[in-house]
Length: 188
Image 1 (cartoon, rainbow, N blue to C red):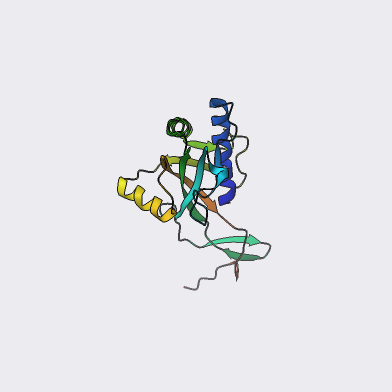
Image 2 (image 1 turned 90 degrees about the vertical axis):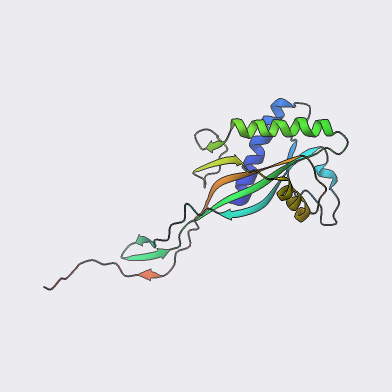
């Protein structure tokens, strides 16, 4: 589900950037900003690099009630759906042209400012498993930005961080059998 969500967002961003920069198809890529060796990969040069930096549980949507699903004469206890937010960074990796970094990053910001909400009705490629997906700006001060780039192991590039809300993980796994109450007998 995480991969489908990130791939969908990448596709929508690339569609927008393709219209803005027709000579440069697929300007955005879904990759690590840094290779394991610590050097930037050639396939991410002159690209906007979209990187998942955190997965958070959505505390507001948490529901602790037990859920049951009836199948025939037996009810099955099922786990609660897990509501997640995906925190991702978009970094402009144009090492030879800083101005291009700023131009393409500005276009990505404009896209998410204009399209903060995605649904199946508004987007034909919307993943079937999602109900809706909102994308919001994630504010990072200078220290938090420094910490993020340090953890990622890369040299700073012009970048922004967004949070995609709310991805619902609801596996079809069904737990233990629970007896169904068919009658009540109250003696008084």
